[in-house]
Image (cartoon, rainbow, N blue to C red; front, side, top):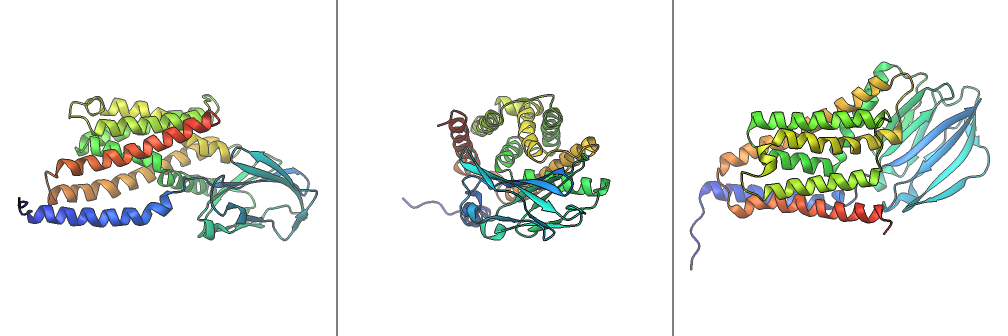
Length: 340
């Protein structure tokens, strides 16, 4: 039996879908590695003396090739100690620097381009000051500021927030599910607003130490929330999350805020500038989320114009992709939490 001819709109939709599929296959090597930045911390212990803590990303291929470079004005002072961690290791050693310390000196990490890794870099001074940044393949070096001002703090934490949300595939999958569940612009706006309010509350509480939960179980709960959203995509229009989208997004946002707080717990907040840096980081998260929403919603509107009513099997693709990733993350994180 010969299949009926396809309409020009349907053929156009399938062509676009094929291109997106090819791009997705090309992106698999990049998405195969979770966001697991390396950590480099320098803490001032006294005049001209700093303790370095270096933690390469666990499970990242080629991580052993990453090498922190100390400034020329500093030299090693004592033996380097290696501590075993779950799935990786941490190295700690002391350095002795020139009378001016690290201010104005350059810190870098070799091997970032080869491993496509980012490094969360923090310098803690004895007087309570803190300077932080992110080293990446395009910018593997950073000069320690003399005394970071408000502009530098806002810029650094705003950038950290944007990079964290755009690099967090799990958070983006949940936002994508919300976009697909709530196609109407006005209702989508209020749904995403609820998600924003939810994660802003727990981000602040967790960062300030008011709320503390084990990070691995928080991450497992985030994976479960993504799975629930994916299952909602397979239901009829009367599904619970569709009916109470803002309330549901707010509740799940509380979980995701705890995940956002994880990166800040690693980097820390500058003494005396905690409210400013926390607000800047949260604004960065929101800016990254808006960029993602626009980057998804506008093409979807175009696809709906090309094919107002796509085949049922096409509608199920996002649900199964998001759901499969969520199941993988859930199993991986629960297993890690149980020590398996």
